[in-house]
Length: 435
Image 1 (cartoon, helix red, strand yellow):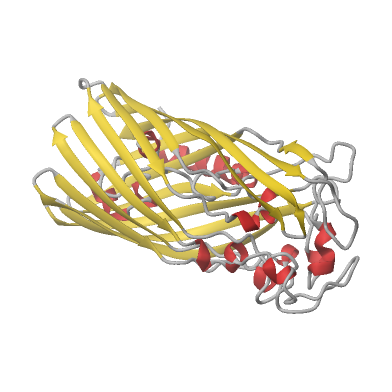
Image 2 (cartoon, rainbow, N blue to C red; image 1 turned 90 degrees about the vertical axis):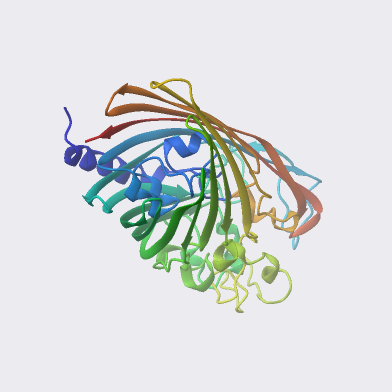
């Protein structure tokens, strides 16, 4: 039998090697759900915690989990493409080649791990390891100049969260919790060197390999029964200040600054009977906290940046890398998650879920978002848990996100229209052990 400590080291090693290829892109670049059980209910779980990954949604739920560990992995498959319509125009217009281009990299293995220890009957400490990330796009040049005229184009953003949680019961049906979070993130951009004339630091704009940064944050949560069969939960994670991506100081606002946006979630769980529960979560993701993500592309076209063709550096606070520099133009997201769980016997637990939210990319921001087409809105999920014995389970979840597209003008050549499109699949599986 594998001991929990050895299992923890194994999953940490697996996660460390996987960070450069994490690829979430479901609610912006946040995952639609954290643990395997939550994934089966479209990510809902703020008021209904089920395992040692609960801290990723609501740390207050950890104290109800007992001594246990949960290990899992997801095979995530996003299908992304863009289409350009309209004939290219000569300089100074910055036109794209007409046609449709599909991104490579359509399958990713993403591990997760959680472990919880009861300190006494009313308090616990736990560790949860999980990840978020960008789309890991890679648009081939196909023997031509590439998407932006600088070869193969794409970005790869990955964020690894290691959360250490203390949780305590307030009463027989209520609790609070706090997580201290270490975040390690990596980033790489390639094929965007043609924007050098708009960058304050063209040498730190593109094709510099992977870079990394770290940061520290907290997540606070409460959970409790407010009426017979009705439980409420809430959690909040303030913005996390991250170190700068020095290799991409000429791309992101503020010389490579890329923080983690604040988030909050409110949840309700209605225990319809001993074998059925209905769960609702409302999640807010504040992408506008992070200028690199939320600033518009317009500073490059409204005079806030004075370009210096062909190789820069540009001048002005609105240039790439500047204090008011251009970004991806993402708006905040509010996501509603609905989940339903029922037991057919002591062996089988079944789950269904649906979530929806308006995608964060305005139609005026499609040019840069070829690199990061986080346009998903609806997610349909299914999952189950099969008890293997009295102390262990096998968990499974499936997600399908139907195709969504957003279309708008090329900011540097309004005669062209750019359409971004994506759909997704995810298969997740895991093992839980109580001890």
